[in-house]
Length: 153
Picture 1 (cartoon, rainbow, N blue to C red):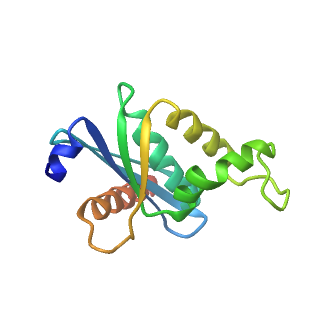
Picture 2: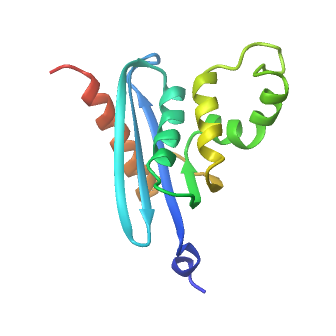
């Protein structure tokens, strides 16, 4: 069975966030691939952080799915990857507090991502950013386009 055969029926999503300054103008981008078809989405905010844009990329990509799906989601953000696969259960158990009893940063977006992930069967994958993966590079380009859309001409 080829890799393409294993991916039939699964949505592949590549996400990225970017900021010009941190905080500063930010953008997010996502590439969604399903059975050979592609959809690219992006957006931005005038005053945000890189981590918020990384989270927003994943949230908006999952929100773009029309029905419950099997998903391979690729992110170059260890913050997103570790947060959703390792830290979130403890945060919830500790009423959205960290190990140091401080409030979890970006809790509004973590709530949204948690909600969106419950609607799908997701396998999370970390990919090294800016390392030549064509879909990750495209998600980065879309995120940078999102930044440009927030800056007046």
